[in-house]
Image 1: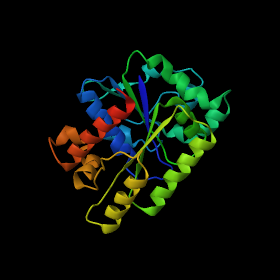
Image 2: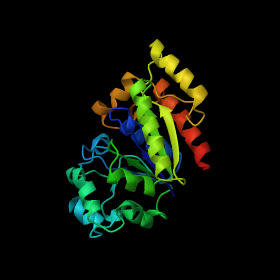
Image 3: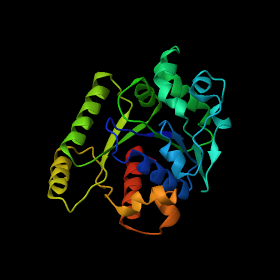
Image 4: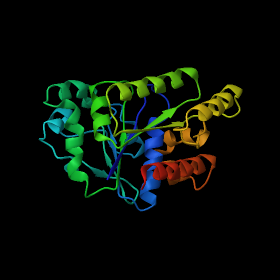
Amino acid sequence: MKVVALYSIKGGVGKTSSAVNLAFIAARNGYRTLVWDLDPQGASSYYFRIKPKVKGGSKDLVAGKRELDGLIKGTDFENLDLLPADFSFRNLDLVLDARKKPTRQLKKLLKPLAEEYDFIFLDCPPNISLLSEAVFAASDILLSPIIPTTLSLRTLEQLKQFIEDNSLDNLALIPFFSMADRRKKMHRDIMENFIETHPEILNTAIPYASDIERMGLERMPLGGFIKKSHSTDAYNELWQEILTRAGA
């Protein structure tokens, strides 16, 4: 089982759309796949037409009163399940802080699912917090979408510094460009220069595109309502790069 977290300190960079689309592609390719919507806004849950509600909320979940597999919902797509969000997840930092070894709690919750899933995608809220540290401890790969802007690049450097300062040597940070608009010279220049100086970034960039925005209207991954587009091609290519990096 590989745990892949879609994470960024900055919001509005395409974490949720990437989590949903990459999970869909993994499932379509035969991998048993789970998305865990950790964001109290519940965007991933919305895309899969599942009510963002967890019985007992975050407190019972972290306390071990609820097993994860009893809360998982099937989606409309084969091999793809969802652990929905809950508005109580806004308090997850406080709930974790009340536990011993708080940063190990998510990993502990996920461990029993190792035989059931090949990939688990974590759709994470932005910022660095105790929940973020628990995500880092539970994940094998930290996929970090970045917009080709100076502020977004700055948050990536902050994230890299945090990982280095906390000696998270087993966590593979893999950034990729998201919401890239090649019509803008600034976007093109930033991507070209950044790729030259940061070999860890994936070559495939996810475009700023209307069909990705349509996901909110259709309430499903791209592949659920469109057969082929520049966006679907980009996500398929991105997935292949991720598999190569993951050694899967």
